[in-house]
Image (cartoon, rainbow, N blue to C red; front, top):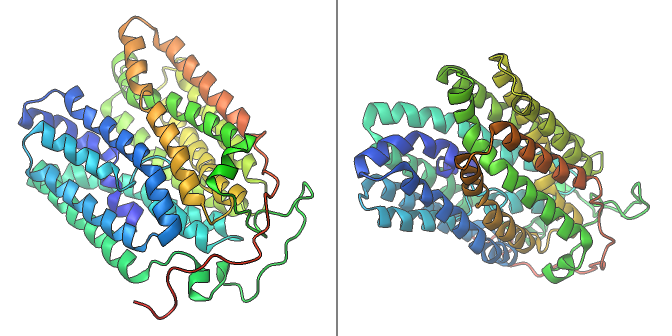
Length: 418
């Protein structure tokens, strides 16, 4: 629900406000879009701190505060007229982590804490809120801007975010089941560790609780960071310029492009749900490899310069399916490989490097195209980056358990407390 109601902060929905806001405020689109970059960098820089807070105290009250901040930011978008004030609101909204790729620890960490054996489906269901919300809020934005104006639309989105986040987190959210005398997955007894395919204890049977420092000493963490950073860096300009390429170079109609782009999040959500179940039965790195292969195939209509209108539909269906499959690996790898106790902190540091570096992908891509690079070379470079990162997923096997925790961490909340 939190993912669904805060998705209006992401670029997909903000794109509907771009033209009307820039005209009414008297600023260029590039000046206004700079706010998105500020938001991403702020989210990346704050992610390690937010992750540590969620690990230590749980997501309950950080979620309440984040929901209030998101509400203030959206309502502020609707009432502000100064670009510097808008930049400040963009920065503030980034501190919530909502709709920051890989950085939303407030909605990723809790289900990963409460589920181990069924972690794949739990994370898939939670993530589906963001994908379905992207489609729903995009349609809502278009309708509300037309009916009420963009300022009223932002105020309404702010109210929706408050209702979707604050009451639920305040009343229902808890850090871990152990804090309430329970066990993950609703189990009645602790699972007995069993040998996995590699002879090591399965990650679904026993958590491997690495601290941040211990995780940073493992090759798999660095390989994972490098692969997802390359992937994000390549995808950023791809998402920015594919619509322009279809419209201006190939002459496809805006209606066709809109239909194609709308299929992306739906295919993402369906693939994410299905692979979330399968990820509980196979090594999760395989979901990354499969998703990466599908993404590479999805890029072929662009790299090959296909001019048939159906290529737009084909691309978005295959790309969205691959993205949803890869997302399962991205959300599960940290709790599965490094345990639950410090996953927020580890995810936060990963997000810091990934988001800050990848935020330059769009400007660099625009610079290359503006200075004469052909779209054909541009798409092949992106294809190479996506394929290289995806191939690296295969080699990201779980680290050896650093230690076994025989004692459970001291709870910060107990059953019966408000």
